Length: 407
Image (cartoon, rainbow, N blue to C red; front, side, top):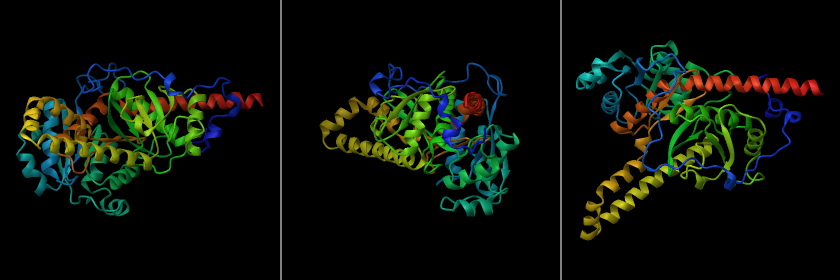
């Protein structure tokens, strides 16, 4: 079936089931509660190898050492932290030698686990994607980090650089997967039940119904790779849970997700913005404009609450004493609300894995992005997405053949 076919062509009306699933959130089974809301959900490694990696195989990560607001000093410090957590990791570093080499020399263990390639060009944080692609293609540190994934030199690429430029280069270099029209950026979202995945947070503005369905499958594959779930729950972000609410594309995507079985996911209907932190579903799907605003609103709110707490705990001597007594609890709260602790947006839908770190991330934040990259490579994210897409399009093709034979 053609990838550019409209949603109604991919999901023929004659094949729709007669039963209708309810969209009442009260009837949905919530994500199993955890005994500790501060505990991470992530699995350490795949239970069964679904890619070319095995338990004894090291992960190779290519890094744009020039990316981010702070450059190599922070990026390499973060890589050094990540190396201690994942001793099986090898790094391929790209950057300007006169800046990178002195920093690398200060981290001898990282240097021993790395291969460094000099690049003449680095992409500025304020550079337009078109200009970055025109001037930095084939020779910039960002491009070469991505290209290392394409050539097989690395399993996954990480950059804290310009998001627009990184996406443009990743799309041009790696290309989108078969039957995927637009890529998405997926973010890890802290919730009261651990973590969930939200996508798209900025790659595709104004996604149509078919693209939202693609995002649902890719987000489900990521949840299986990251959380070890067999069939993660998925919800569409909307202005209400009722079927009549929302834009046409959202309502159409919701209808199709309910009426057509999608491999690897359990669709639970619409979720609202105030559900994002509740952990009602494992994966929340939206288009990039709304997702990016939601992400930045959440990050800003977290910083605002942290500032409120800091001010409140320093107003009086009694408040200061109370803070000292409860310091460990406040430290856990701060870590849970710190955006850098869940740093890393995953580019989904490409023929390779690329992780985007916050540009202003600290060394610990860079390490968190590398942790995520390691998990995605180790647990076979790309292979899971490809398998889901293949099963889905074979299933939708069979359904279309049945519908046509009945006409």
